[in-house]
Length: 277
Image (tube, rainbow, N blue to C red; front, side, top):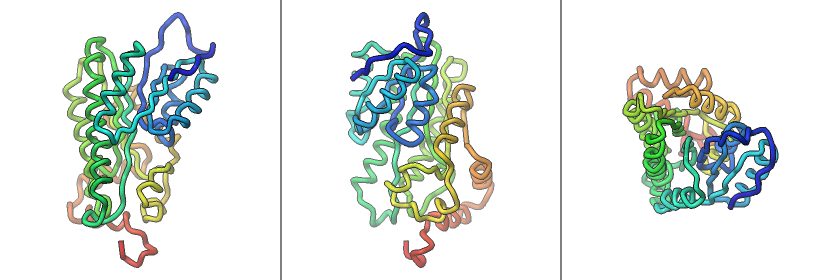
């Protein structure tokens, strides 16, 4: 649905660009929507339509932009095509694509639920790749566009006790850097945002809020979103917000792999579980 727009800050003589944001109902996604609303019309998508409609009303009242609500579950293979079919039906073009949706799962690979891990791959990798593929042709024709893929510092190393999640984020980093290189000079930029631990619903859903990593402290999602937005608007390929996160990302590239994996395992563990993870 499209909620009615209000007169506001946007210059009505110039049609604003449209940004598609996935996972926009909470966390980094909703903070990115708030940052982009003064400059962009938005198409926001997530599973929870009620939350999306509430956000749309908030942003339209504040900024006078159009906020298109497109509920979708990216764990379903058909969702990316359905989203773009709806965008086309509404006569929109995607000038900025924010692939923010994603989730994790904590536990030993041999014991975790296969269906949940396959859905994680579908959301974190397959849907992200599909949406990028669907958005790119129009951007290339217009010779202008921005893509932000939200990865994680997890993607810089193996992640025992979250093996599949870490692997999905490694894919996002490598994919983003590769297509950023391919698209150089086209007018389309690709930014990979790699936050560390962030205070969102992610930790609760992944069942890792008691891990050493999150006990060490988590960044506020507003700070992460601001760093990502600034980096995307500046055309940066890689954005790692926070000094500690930058240090970790650099150090794991230079350290012995077995040591990196052992440290990663230690950070994932719950110290109250007496080593039983």
